[in-house]
Length: 492
Image (cartoon, rainbow, N blue to C red; front, side, top):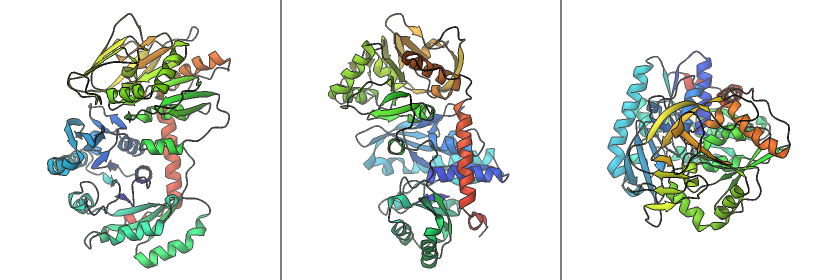
């Protein structure tokens, strides 16, 4: 089990690295996080919803993601409430102060069911567990679902990760160990220092001090990794991105208050010629080459935020009126529509209205309600077309409430007409992951490049999963070089 001294210590990537290293050793690692809180989600082949970080760990393990790997997912939706997902399906919502009262027992039942499902499907597999936040939040420890309760239940051998970049790494580790109960401390079999800058030997004295004062081996010192990895949360996404040298296109991305599924942007971020610039409500749009409106967990709440901060809203409308390229994904596409109806009050409008005008950049009407659309999809793109180029295959997944219809004739985005529409220079789709298709992504970028008189990029690009897999290999290479797993893998 990979525990961390805090949120953001690097547990998700270290767990992914561990999965890839164990796979190289001929094992079948089974990634598992009992409870995760994230709006960055993935939909598995059976139509179950899970956190993207566990999907990433499954790919690192060479497995197809399945929601049993993340049996409890909490999706924040504002006002201290979250949607509760158990084993891939929405089972309700809850306020933070009532969560453990109402959802502790069902959550623990779902966690055990997820474990049984995974271990039944892979009886020779080795569970690789990821903790959440800090394992020693003393006010939450008696009701902890995913850290030490799970570690004790499975008698897991734990590695404790600390982020030296944050400072105070000795206090992080010693303080965490001090707050463990006597029955829990033997579970910690190794310490790992993450994000170290400079030569590792500079930390040799610190390493010796930690081992002498805790009695626990320091398994390794992981360097700061300059590679671009899919982030677990939006703060990491925004902090980790810097200016690129030689970027030829600037794409503005709306930083919606209820931003979700931001991993949709990873393939664009990985393009050397593209600079993403995140723009929050109230900020100036500027003069980008295109605007992407990403997914939203609370579409009407985000629409309210745009309306209240008219600078960005009016800038986007003026940009589109001038022929600027605007592309919406899922909730982002719904925002671009003309009418949004929410008869059940599902989408969090702050003024209580159940119907609101959209940004009117696409002639669409969306009605929220019913069950979620949760399924993987594949289709043939009908847009954009450059010259005599043929149609391209695209794939991804749907993850949304509500149905959308056109109010006037619209060009379909792909052969599955209900998946997206195009109106002039504005387009949108319900297909999460559309940018992962290398040929389609390059065609979309080439449309922008043609407007600037830039040379065309090759469309002969592999699916982004190939690049992601190469990044996971490089992460595992670094892990193998800098971390000694023997004390962790040895039986007690």
